[in-house]
Image 1 (cartoon, rainbow, N blue to C red):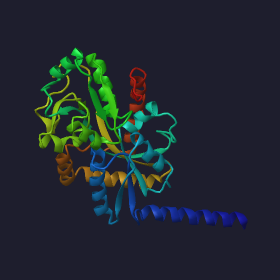
Image 2 (image 1 turned 90 degrees about the vertical axis):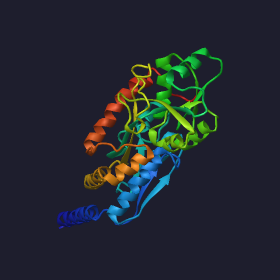
Image 3 (image 1 turned 30 degrees about the horizontal axis):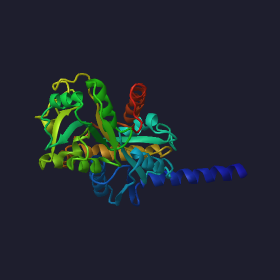
Image 4 (image 1 turned 180 degrees about the vertical axis):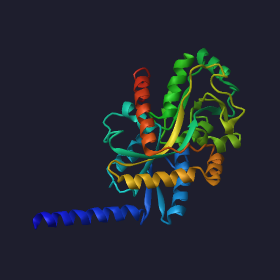
Length: 321
C-alpha cells in the first residue's frame, strides 16, 4: 500500500509539473539585464520583452541590475527558481567573465541553461566627432607618438569592448588606459563629453550618437563591412590585420529549468527574431538579429568561446588597470 501511495503521489507531482509547463507562462516573466538602461543589451532586451509579452499575453518585466560586468545579474538568475519566470539577458562577456572575475558566485557553464540568441554583431572603434583623427592610421600614429596619454571606455572589466581594446593595443603596438563603466551608455556619454578618447562598443550603443554627429566610427571588428555602417572600413581594410571579434546578446535560464519550458521560450524567441518588425526595430538601434539556433547549438557556441577566451586571457591583461 505504501509503495502504491508513493507511486500515486509521484504521478500527481509529474502531472502537475507537466501541466505547469504546458501552461507557461501564466504570470509575469522577468528579464534580468546586467547592464545599465539605455545600452545596446538593454535596448535589445526590451524589444524581446515587448514581443514576448504580446505573444504570451503576460507582462514581461525588464530589470536592470548593472555592475561587475554583468555578474551581479548573472548571480541573481543563477540562484533563481528554475521555472522559466526569471531569465538572464546577457552578452559575450558572460563567458569571458570566467577568466577575468575572481570569486564568481556561480559556474559560467553549469549554473545556466542556454535558451536563444537574439543579436550577433561586430564591435566598432569610435572616437568623438570633434577628434582630429579621421581614420585608424591617424589614430595609431598619434598613439605611437605618445605626445599625450590616451584612454578608452568599456562597459566593464572583462567585457568584449575591453577585450577589443586590449587586442587593439597588441595588434598596433600601442598603449592606452582602460576606463571601465557599469554599462555602455555611461561610457558613450563620457566619450561624447571628451572624458575618454575612444571605445570599442557594439553598433547599438553608438547609432544615436553617430546620427547626431557626436561620434565618429573608424573601423569594425568583422571580416566584412557591417550593413548599418557601410562606409566604415574593417580593421583589415584600415591596415590592422587579424582583428575580428563580435558581440552576441542572448537569453539564459537557471540550470534545472524544465527542457519543455526552455524549448518553448527558444521557439518563441526564434520566431520573434525572424519577423520584419523585430529586425527593423533592431536596425534602428544599429543591431542585427542573430540567426536562430537551438538551445544545444547555443550551448555549443558558449563552450567554444570558453576555450577560445581561455587562450586569449592567458596572453592579455584583462584585469582592472
